[in-house]
Amino acid sequence: MEIIQIVGIGLMSTVLILVLKEQKPMFAFLLAAATGILIFLFLIGKIGGVISTLQRLAESSGMETVYLKTVFKIIGISYIAEFGAQIVRDAGQESIASKIELAGKVLIMTLAMPIIGIIIETVMKLLPA
Image (cartoon, rainbow, N blue to C red):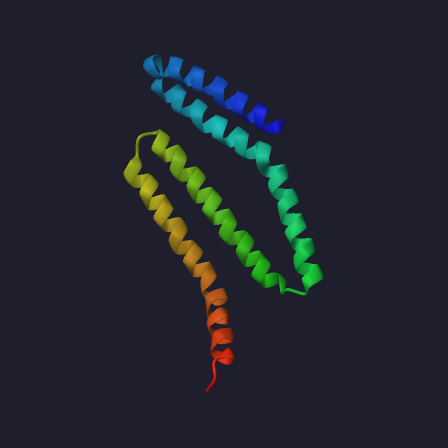
């Protein structure tokens, strides 16, 4: 039922934004940004539940926590970059939004390099010499 609350907040904000956009565009943008942040904060608890479940699964499987932490960082970067890019897009700055997305992709690749290296090493060990 939480989705109904989120959609309700989104719909009410959209109506207010449409009304404000003609008279006070800056307030309309601020309301859009605040709505996005409110929805994101609403979901933080759910994200925390997913993270704790994944941590329990990783611990029970004997997986090294450094890999799980790296995956969490990658997921966090992707969510934050997407969120930031959407807000900037709402302000009409498509080129800056694209740069935020590019930065997120580069940071993700940087974090993923150790994992990619381990995968390549494992594959090389499996291949006959």
